Length: 256
Ligand code: SAM
Image (cartoon, rainbow, N blue to C red; front, side):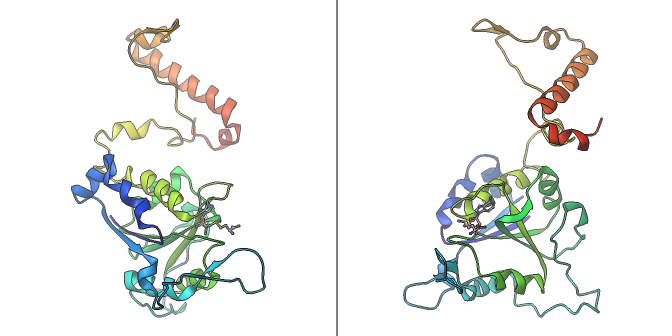
C-alpha cells in the first residue's frame, strides 16, 4: 500500500519508522511519503493560513498550498463527468459499506465533523492501494479543498471521536496504525487479528499470562484446565458480559 501524508509537522510521523509499521516499511509492504505543506507555498514566509471570511476566532488553512500539494500527489485531474460512469469517482461520504470498489487513490481528511473511524472502516481502507491523508491545523482547511477534490475523486472526512484535537496528525497516526496492521504480512501471526475487540462486534475477553497467581489474584481456573471447549465458552461469555457492561451500544450490532 502507498500512503501519502500532507502536514505542516512532518516530524510527527518519524515514529512510523518504529515497531511493526517500521518493519512493514522496510519490507516494502507499506510505502510512505510525508510531505510538508509549506513546501507547496510560493511566498517568502511559506504561509499556509489566513483569517476566516465572515470573521471569528482562529485561522483557516488556505486552499492554494493544499491544491499544489495534492495535485503533485494525485495529479491534476479534470472534473468527473457524471454521465460517464467509466471515469466518475464517487465521493464517499456515507458508511464504509457504501464504499465503491475503486482503484484510484482515496483522499482522507481527518475532521471532528467526519464519519466515525471504526474497525470496519480500517478493514475497508486496508484493501486500498493508495491512501492520501491531509492533516488540518488551526480551525481547519478551506472547505473548497474538500469540494474540489470530491468532484475529481474519492474523498472522505473521518473523525477519530467526539472531541477536538489540535491537528490531524495524531488522528492520522491512529488511523494508519489501525489500517496498517490489517495489511496481510504486517502482523506476524494473522490469527491474533481475528479475536480482537470490534472484529465480531464485541469487545475482547480478558487475557492472562504467567504466573498463575500474582498479588493474591489467580488466573481463572478454566484457562488452566486444558479444556478448549470450556475455554472457548468462557471467553465468549466474558466478551458478552464485558460488552454489555462497558459498551451496551454495541450489543445490537454484534454477531452471536
Ligand atoms: N474548527 C474545527 C471544528 O470545530 O470542527 C476543529 C479544528 S481542529 C482544532 C484542527 C484539525 O485537527 C482539524 O482540521 C482536523 O484535521 C483535526 N482534528 C481535530 N479533532 C479531530 C477528530 N476528532 N478527528 C479527526 N481529526 C481531528
